[in-house]
Amino acid sequence: MALRLFKYSRLKALPTILLSFKQKIQVRCINKAAEKSVKKPMSAKRRFFWIPRPKKFCPDVNTFLSLIGRNMSEHASKFPSWASLFKLESLELKRLGVEPARTRRYLLQWRERYRQGNLGVGADFKHVKDGKAYLQIAQIPKDPKIDKNGVEYVPPGLRKVVINLPPGVTSVDDLPPEKIIPVKGYRIRGAKTIVGPYALPVKGGRGSVVTREEGMWEFKRGRKIDGGERRQSEVRAKRRGEEKRAAQSPESSI
Figure (tube, rainbow, N blue to C red):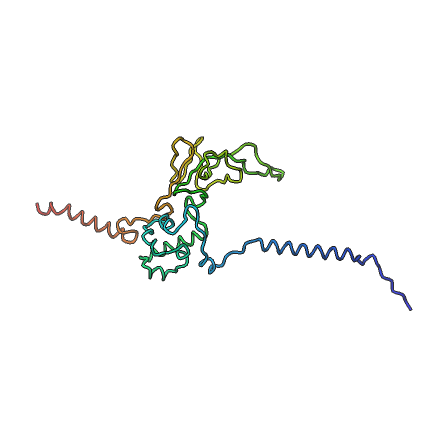
């Protein structure tokens, strides 16, 4: 009877097998945790019925309709709550008397922009009191860069940014570093001048103030000149003919 010899060197020890199995489980758990942490895109149906939270610069229905302009604040009484502003569909808006159709389209367009966070100036202000937001210049470390060797480093020195000052705080030096967050849409001209939409200098020369006004986010409508693009040539031709006849009428009478 022939004996069969096994090459034990090819076999793995039991602790090694268990260790590799444990590592696979750990990797699988890490991948699942990473998948959960990544936010899945919201479906169109869910986004249509999703009600976003009011912002500091736009806390209620009346303020929102006032900001988007086109006399939309006239319809503020038709929306009893913030949720109703985002729940009503086009036919329901028509029954409430939001006319004409272009007004409803404009409101639906701004509702979708609000859901996406694509708003106008002042939307990222965190500190607003009585419709006013105060801006000041602060200094923060420069953004990190990558050198030729691929190593990340922070350049020396500081850079100036415009921040929204909380109420009750008179100086930027009193703020902790985590509270110094730059605002969008505003920049610094020269040494201490803040430039941006609706920014007016504060008395004393320290910072600027942005006051909430009607129509700050409004999309301005174009003006029809001489009947618009379709009828412009026709209207101008008629006008030239009338001017020509008016110029020739005295000569013919003589």
